[in-house]
Image (cartoon, rainbow, N blue to C red):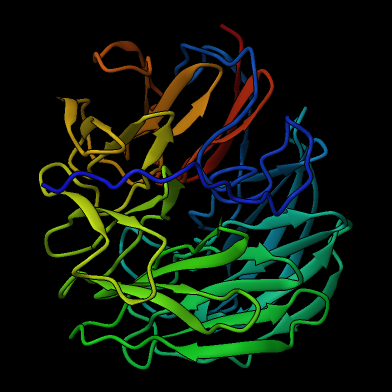
Length: 409
């Protein structure tokens, strides 16, 4: 294990200007799982501290997004032998559905049992909502649910369905298209949906498919788009798609976790068959595989959940339910404990607590720190793979059939 080379703190410029109570995209306002929300519940179950519960038609594992007291999510409903891919809006206070808009109609295609045809999380930015359905297409809607533009020309061969969410970088909506062959990364004009740039992902991995959400960071005044795929993570110029650096990790495929950034490093897992958590310094150029990997974690690394960086500590939970706290600078493991169940959802830091959620709907609440301390274990009683959305006083949880608002103490 190599020690991380010390760098001055590097800050990522926020892409969004949202209220503290908003959760406008996958993993929150800054895309890192942090929320400034207060007065969140510590305990709940299927009835306790459930402020409301509403059934969501169709199927989908997109996590909810929240903007100005309205929730947004996507779903796939059966419609005469086809799938109706839809965007939904609900009132966050009551759960009342405000509108449901059909975005794309398509014949059904097989997907993995832990995936859906509506897995990417919507983005809300100002008066626009961006929804992404992987190889089916991408669209922009206004806050009333009217489709502003639709992009369905980007074709690729899906494996297991769609998964990664898009992000915004200036005027660009960017996402990865890592299918069975010819993987690429693409940027759309957020105003029109037209392609701004499209770059091939150069990889030697035998299996090309992956599902990761990019992360936007800023290093010495230059933005970098961190985009993991099979066998390699690349840093691209978000304005042009030009590659700044790359780091290889062998045959790792089906890469899912969204990278997190801090201490001059990005933290990400390398995918199947054996995930390895990498801490990679971001000040390099070209192929940095042999020079910029600061440390690795091979035991307890996640396949699916993203990492959570809190100060000098990095928290991860493996798909098999092993939670670990590491020194973010060196990779030293402070603790590693079994927290029960299998995990797909990414952890959240809010109200001074870390919120985990396993696939059977049990929420585990931990106290951040170098000593393991479990504060609560809360069984909702429904399957869930989606990650939390957070606001002041409440958590929003999407289960297989319902959307919950959890509040109280």
